[in-house]
Image 1 (cartoon, rainbow, N blue to C red):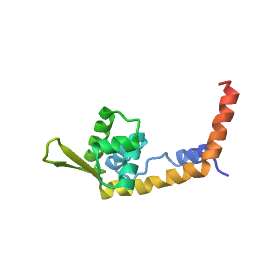
Image 2: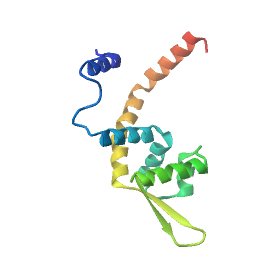
Image 3: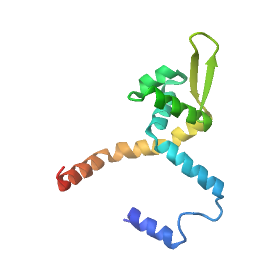
Image 4: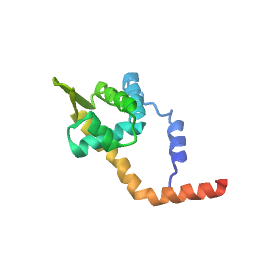
Length: 139
């Protein structure tokens, strides 16, 4: 069975990870998207919208849980900027704002489902590895 280290070494022997046919702009976008998705709040917000449909700001915060208002604001603004969600402001007092996943956001959610499946499949193995590591490190 090939390890990740072996796969990385093989790719590096072939000239590295960059592909000559991939433009620098696309490579930069991929890096940006990975950085965004690596932010747990983005995926948790997308999951909430996927499961519940259109939500108000406070509903997202309640469903996601543990996110500050400042971080929620920052995250939904970035997600809107990236085209993952849309924001609709209703002209009422107090303001009523709805957030909805876009097709782009749904596609990202679908792509990320593989990580959820992986986590469900290998949860016990990861937990066992973590426990073994803690035992070896005396933690």
